[in-house]
Amino acid sequence: MHYIFLTTARLILLFIILCSFGCYPALKKEALLPEDSLTPIRCFYPSFSDDMDLGSLKMVIERNLVYLKRINPETVFKYGPHSFTCTQVRESQEAFLALITTNHDWRQLDKEIRKHFMVYRATGRPGNSNVLFTGYFEPVYDARLTPDDKFKYPLYRKPDDLVRIDLSQFSERLKDEKVTARIEGNQVLPYYTRHQIEIEKALKGRGLEIAWLRDPLDVAFLQIQGSGRLNLPGGKTMRVGYLASNGRAYRSIGNYMLQKGFLAKEKVSMQEIRRYLSDHPEVREEVLSSNPSYVFFRILESEPVGNINIPLVPGRSIALDAKVFPKGALAFMTCKKPDVDNDNNITGWREFSRFVMNQDTGGAVTGAGRADLFWGCGPYAEIAAGHMKHEGELYMLIKKY
Image 1 (cartoon, rainbow, N blue to C red):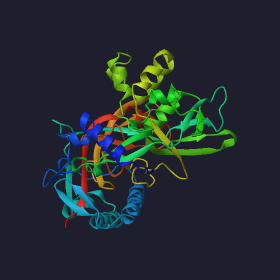
Image 2 (image 1 turned 30 degrees about the vertical axis):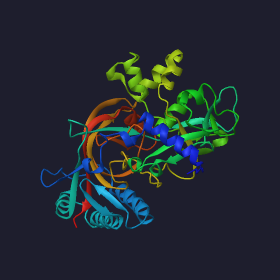
Image 3 (image 1 turned 180 degrees about the horizontal axis):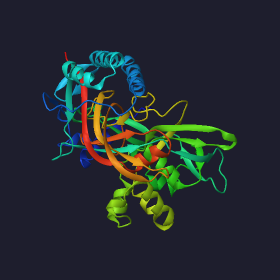
Image 4 (image 1 turned 60 degrees about the horizontal axis):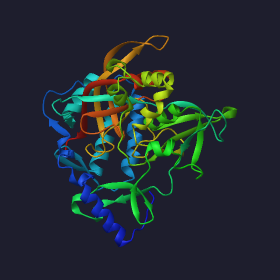
């Protein structure tokens, strides 16, 4: 995190601006609280079964335990109306790992889970107890380390003048709230929008480029996914991942295209969005600029990592709203996944259920009714991530104490 020391006058100025315009979460009276996101259940349990291999489940739990072991053991996690320490969460996941290691029969495991674990259901969207699941994946794009006539769209690292300011020092009402900004002279300003960065070239010439891509849509979709692989000349590969954003609110370009009549509702998928914008370059700038949010990257030495800074496991890691769900929580989901033919065409959707871990977050994933499943890399991952937009159920588990 980049720190900056502000003069007292600037702090007062910032506080006056925030309170005068009422533009930050301190004034959000209807914000969802963690205790509202999960409800304990005593009956009507889901049928605990898993459509994936146990090896991937063990891996995601073991990686999650690395996260839990490196934070303060007394850190408190909210599971709906109940609170648990990090030690209790870690012990719970160790117990679950031991359970699935010694027993591979899901009928028996289902009984053991009900006997030994508390189960909480996500409250879902307002007026709907289900959760809307979407997907994300790790795309692969060609790139260059120096620009040329074809590869001229930069992927930026985090600028030095992008700062995160802790607002809790101004008022108790601003507890746990932060703002992303830049300091220009005596002014505290919102950071540059996507349009200012990509069209007005606000960051050009500052040496922030990690690589150059061939298509602005590659940059935009890489930012939406949060991580990806870059194929470089000579057979080399570079992995990049999310580091920071400009702090602007995320706006779905799919919803914008739907409102403008560019796409029909049944056609809104990642693949159709890309196809339309490739075929209609005259509206590309307008559509991409409708989302003011902009993502900055870092070079990764391993697989994509989530917001708890551990490598994600394809099919096992999910992204949830970090403000309302406990990080690193063991979860169970039910939803639908696509069946595809040999030509990677979707032939239908079938129900599935599996255990997952809350290891990431995202700008579009807000509230108790949204979840994003990480599908990994490859053709099927791209298809599933691009088309998944189905309701399902989300549960969280912790050992009974």
